[in-house]
Image 1: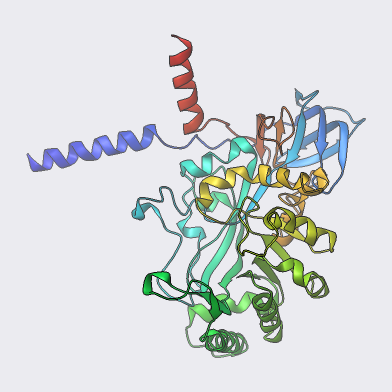
Image 2: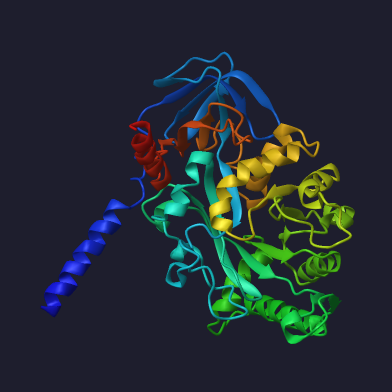
Length: 430
């Protein structure tokens, strides 16, 4: 009886899992496809009216205004075509339901664990991942969280059978959370809520410096004892990996960049950068890019400008700093689908619409080191793009009709669209 109960339960679970699985990944492109008549937003700040885009075998083979069509022709007259939106520093596929701890796999035990690889934990069957595509978010940098050094990220495309198929750039960067020089008092312990100096700041910095010194020494040692953490750091010193440092304060960012450069780290990107506008000249001089925290945020301090989170990307862009947007914050995974609208909000701050688009396409591709294949609509690059009936940066008009990832015609159906159709049918029938 007990065995029968267990078998029955297992069958029910399997049937339920299958019925609620993600849409089947699109098959490989087999014939040429032409998108004709759309306004093409290239992703580098330029626009091509009445465009023709041809792609074969997953690559754009021609783009212009007076070029012959080929293969299956999609008439996109009056519509708009965009490069796929890229979500950096994301936990997409590493968690499903925030309230259910067993579905969350974005953090591992340990403080200095660069050898923890997020890619192998990526769930290609995630319904949250699936829900990104109808808004044009087609690529993501899957990133571990927690600790001082969280682990190693990888970049994936968001329509795949498994993590192996999803991988676009494997082990692209290591992510570090820089300590704060000031801490807010813990009110629950009766401490003053105001900011006070962090007494452990220098100690934390010494631990980081020591780890970097030892990791670099390990790289240069011929007979290396087995140390997976130091082994994972090797790419930071030869330029094959990028160090993404989560820091927000002026002092913290300067200390982080200076420390990394002094210890031989080739490529550094600031994540968050709340006070980056105060050191814009320093960032530009040191060729440091910034992945700005979610723009739909409140100011952190009482004397900050009320619109600082909204205006920060423009302040840095105007200063010549390479900027991208990310969605870190509460309910980050779900809110990642709003990335085009974060960029759209910047237009109200005076940023040119095509420059705002760059912050989620071309710029982000450069920062992540995948701009040779993604981020812009150019001949020779991946046909990872989407067609929208209107302005993709406006939630009222960003209605997608087609999505292509590496030339594959991807389904726009999700669990959410299925529910919408189901209940619309119910109420329209009344």
